[in-house]
Length: 253
Image (cartoon, rainbow, N blue to C red; front, top):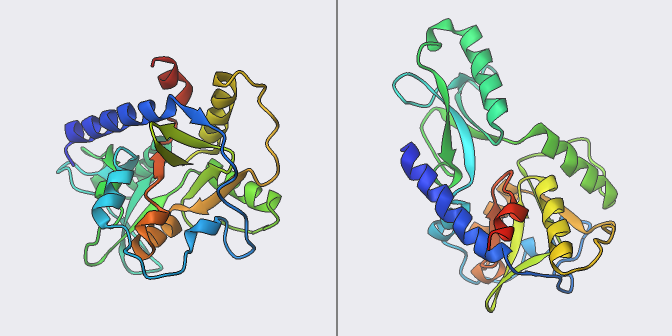
């Protein structure tokens, strides 16, 4: 993907997101925990029109992931010994991608010349398909640990987490004019910072988060539900890029 176009998409997303984040509101909790799934609204009954791929791509625009590229600016693939397929890996953390590249070049020194880590927009790759290649999203390890902790606090202990965790709070929505949005964060720390910013901007002491206030789900499950369930259940969702400095952008408005 053209790096200039990616950077422009990210800048456009950040401008739109900053406008949304300028106004905070604390609504009545829109979600309830259920034993079967982390977010009650994920699975809704009915045969309403699902969200289009284009709409999903728009929501993922500006979310950076990091891939390995060879000297010809092609994806550098990793051999999957157990599957017999080549793997195309997209990391949510740049340092993880750099470490992966170092390991790949140690194993195969011929790939060292010209290989590098490149940012790619998630909306361009989230449903990428190539024969003989399995594409995988690699979450930040720290966020997987955060996800497991939140599951345990909510009464759903687990020995593992499958997928890329995304976090939201029942105590937070974003408001822009007459429209309300549910922000989904790729880092728990970004969500916590946003909650603190919201409390400060409303001139209130930041209350301690109650158990269950932070919810976690897998990005892959959210996208699956977007594709299969009613658009009306998802048209208020926005994804917040990892490390997005909400407080800094809000203070500039």
